[in-house]
Amino acid sequence: MTALTRLHREVESLAIIARAPSLRQAADLLHTSQPSLGRQMERLEREIGAVLVDRDSRGSRLTAAGRVFLAHAMKLCQDLDRAIEETRQIARSEEQALSIGYVEAIPPRLLSETALLLRNRGNGARLETEVGTVVGLVQRIRARDLHLVFVDARVEEPWLGVERLWEEPIVACVPTSHPCARLSQVAIAELACFPLVLLGTTRVGGDPIVGLLKRYNPSYVIAQSSDRAATVLQAAAAGLGIGVLPASAFQRIEGITAVPIEAQASEMYLGWRRDETDSAVSLLLECARDAVKTRPRHELLATGIHGTGSPQAVGGG
Image (cartoon, rainbow, N blue to C red; front, side, top):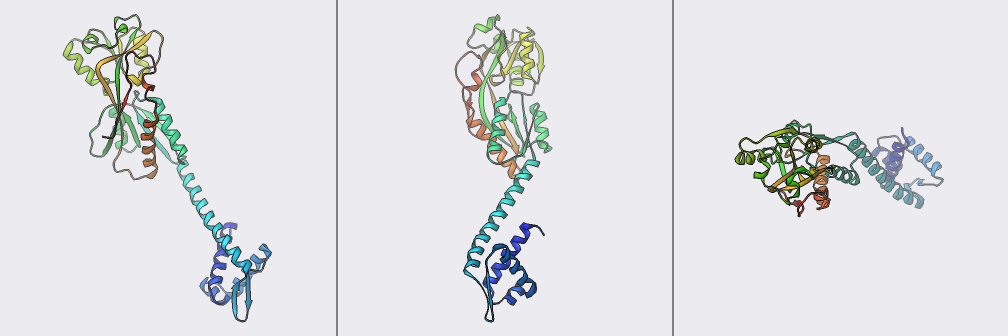
């Protein structure tokens, strides 16, 4: 018997003795013998150093010392039970892994802010992240391999909850020597005259741009397509073509500047399974929403992008 188990039994026995008219009746209620209960109380009294139970021919009752000890001991046992349960919950959460999938265009700060909020709110789960395309991430969350996804295209599925987070400009990443680098904005018609490097083909920076390019120049050229923003920027720096990225995916790179594309915006969404019942996942969803709210509005355009304005946060949808 552990010390905690013995303490709980002794406190339970003392509480029954306080209510029963005699030690024999208390023993019956505890499903033990009177001599065994008497020895248990004698051992407890020796450890405490005080008489806790008066025993005489009229029955048994707690002494003043016994009543004080019982009150404190019962509170102690309740606090211990609570401490044990909370400790077990934390231990379970630390063994659990929560997962977020995201597209390259999502600012890394969102992931770190979400992880920080999760830890600060008492969940010690290991947070795993996975980058991918919109189509791939939706397949992964449908298979329950992911708990949340940050994507840059709205996905209409009956089982998927979707919330629009914000919209931001799409930018053309051009060498500083390029004619478009001097513009405050560049039109799609102008971009259609140059080879382009796109961020994937399942992103807001991909398909809509392609559709508009076809309208203005059916013989437009896509020099390269990549799922990584860094590759798009490197290709633009190497002179392979004009890179096309959401503003938040642009990073400072020597010799490259970003110019907003006229009347084009990228929308960012948060997605989750509607049938998810795990409280840890609900907390993760709450932290992801709050991470968006706490992100500085100027952050996405603080990387040398021409033009004015900032990403527009929006409500659920």
